[in-house]
Length: 316
Image: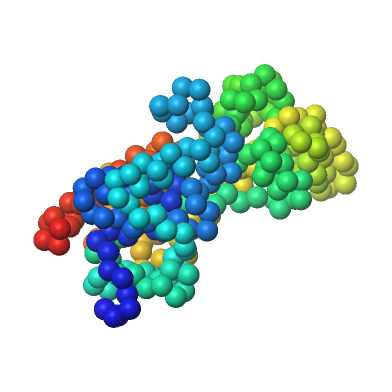
């Protein structure tokens, strides 16, 4: 162990609902957790304006406010919340070794990874502007579809997630345009049949998004047919991007077992990874649900698993 390294019982890497909930439970168990927030304290929810589906907030709450509440609750029980990003890890060492911002070395008896996943975007200037201004651009139909009830919306994507979210939106919205880049979809046959048999979903094949219109909120989407070159303007008020997520797990590759997309494998029904004392919670290990409440639940599991691991190993 380096003489300069700070040693902690429980290190939590990443904030968001999973990280902060893990911190609440770990602190209450007297594990004296230290949490590093990552470069986006609070995670993806800090880019979400209205959160209407998190239990306990009957009038809704903004994403940043929810994250501040969770942070305050974690700190109330003694969690040290620090700004910084884990940049290197040696999880096979005893104790585990983590470097923050390339310079700060931390050793830990247990590590809870809650680094989340980042939505992939098209990269259009107006997409970024309207997304950051909460103007009707979203990467989560289940989270935000409610706000477009009875309206016309567009969704980009061709995989199972896009098909599932298009179907979900079709139950809320008057019309759903599904923008598909190729002449076929990557979604499973069952999901494709479901989309094609839904009357208010119109699939735009061989199409790409050229621009998103609107000063303060989405007022339309310009779509280009890649075969004919034809431009078409869709009169929509919501624009959903469903082209995938990338889990923020690169620094753990080669140490933790992951699937082909980089999501950390956990032992069924737990947060345990292939390395004893290392636990993964939230969206970095969940490509199925990706909801704030499920992330929070898994954060609780991570802290309980860490507490039990320490008790069994005689460290705590």
